[in-house]
Amino acid sequence: NFIHRTLTFINAQFNSEIPKPSDLDEDEKRILETVKSKVETIAKEIEGCQLQSAAIGLIGISRIGNQYLNEKEPWKLVKTDRNKAASIFYVVSQVVKALTIVSAPFIPFAAEQLWNTLSLPGNVHEQEWAEALKPLPAGHKVAKARPLFSKIDAKPQELDEKLEKIRETLNRKPWPQGSVGVLPIKLDLHVHTHYSDDSLITPKDLVFYAKKQGLDGVAVTDHDRLDGALRI
Image 1 (spheres, one colour):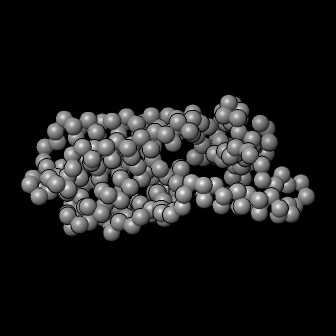
Image 2 (cartoon, helix red, strand yellow):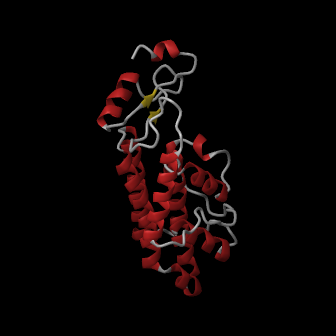
């Protein structure tokens, strides 16, 4: 909601261009500093396999932007103080940019769609984490905003019933011999270990963190180094 509100307003009121800010006031500087701190914290949490906490931090960034819009009401200011409204939307556009990078590990397809909407080069999954804090320049042209997710018009009880039917269908499906079918297991983890050129973690550390998080499986696959993977 926050992302769509921001981009559709920029489409409509600023010719789809990131507006040029005047001197940022203390509130605007505080928002950017808070987002910077959260982006750095989320990076540490992901590295430490604290994925739930990182996901909560991601939602927190969105809430910061949404609350800031609600407090400042720039849709009113644009009629009386367009320069101030421009500064506000410059700031929240930077929040959107940060969300694009930080959300990529959690909602990869939506993050890529958003990256394209921001008219940024390449693929969001090719970017460094630090890209989240590189500001969109004033005058940068963005594409027309589209909803990232489809709205589900159903009551909670109806959703529960639909999910239960899906579970029943899956559980009735004949599974191949040796398959566990549908069981409440946690996701496994796939990363590159120190046998890969782009390594981030050693195999022993990977196993340690996986056990710490209670994961049910770990896939260790290294390019052309299966012998090394087997030495864990």
